Length: 199
Length: 416
Image 1 (cartoon, rainbow over the protein chains, first blue to last red):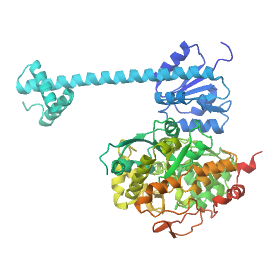
Image 2: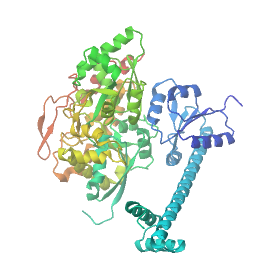
Image 3: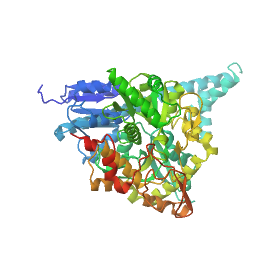
Image 4: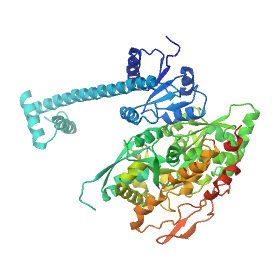
């Protein structure tokens, strides 16, 4: 590896996301990558990493601290300009929308940094999509469990079959203009209040 | 009231007691009365607030009073001009130290009443004792470089003969992490907005040694930050929002509403903390170190004494401190840019129909009012003051250069 290879620091308490970004950077040929997921001793670890580029997620409350560090201390080798270029607003907006910001050592060639930030933005967006899909899947799973429990209660209570119990749930949901899972939830709540044995 | 659809306005805020005006404007219907659907977004850093406002994710924001000035002076990452058409109150911060440092201060005669002069003298003695013993220098935290906390802490230290750059270390720590940092010994003290001082006292991990209101009575802290562009494109919406925030300020200041406001702020979507931690700042009764709350005059003012008026003398004082501590070199252009960051003209226009007693001037001499003073104003009488600095020094915005030159521990002078 040439000595001009950039040292990239990823600061992200979300280890999975950090790993996803790292993987992307490695695929793109970067090998000097450090990840900090633990915020204690942040200053010392930044010093050790001596980064040219810092990628940090916007959920991290330490951005104000980082910017102060860049402004006043000698912890980082050179003065650090924030983002790629003050004038590159479109990219900055895109980065912020994705939930990522970057700090760059002054004097770096813009195109070298831009590709890194592009990649980080892409990976942040991809991670967000995965997170949303996971949420939806989780929700669907828990809704199915709720409906199953409500069906069981109805079957016992009204001495009906599983299909009939489901049909009853669906009808009620349609009449009340609510989701089936919501109806199931209230049935479970009611049955909890009146006790399991109140047949 | 109008039947037209509500205009959505997105506002960013940090979970602090002085976000109260925005929260009350939404929750108590003041924004809605002005035809505004105010959406509030809780943020994790001032950097996020600044950046999201810059790129248009937010229309307005709860903002550190010096931040719009810093942005306009090119000290921010993005070159987007900001303005502050309204302040969001006066005061609200305090200085808290660890139990260990408090013991040392008490041993050197620090009083328990929050008097900045005598606490400062004790702190100076502690620092010099530590220097003699070759102990590490004390570490104090603030929330941001361009913050009232940072400047009032430095002002207090310097006025007590402590050089903030040589006699101790000042670092930045996010507000919600202050108590932990203090408890773990990573820092010895901090200056932060409420509820993060009371939180340390309740937790038993720190003691409040003085308050912003004691260092500089009736002093500026947060403003409503807006991009210049948004203000120009949406003048009516901005004016409506300022009126809503004005009404919210009256509601927040009414002591009868204190329990209601505390409950509101404590809510999960806002500060997400126990009401008991939020209430002291609202009621201006602070427990400094024990469980006994004591009244602290003007600790946090939401409405009275023109608390929401964006005084250009406030902007210029912040600017004078940026110069004093070497964040920027003084020039006539910078001074002008700082002054024009605050827009009392927009404030006057928006509130002109409400019968509010309005200051006639846009600047005042800070520290000139030793007493509560009735002043003639456009529409009725205005009550201002006391507004003094604890060391008795007066800030005349028309003589800013003299003021900067005369101040102690002056980076502008000491640069070598």
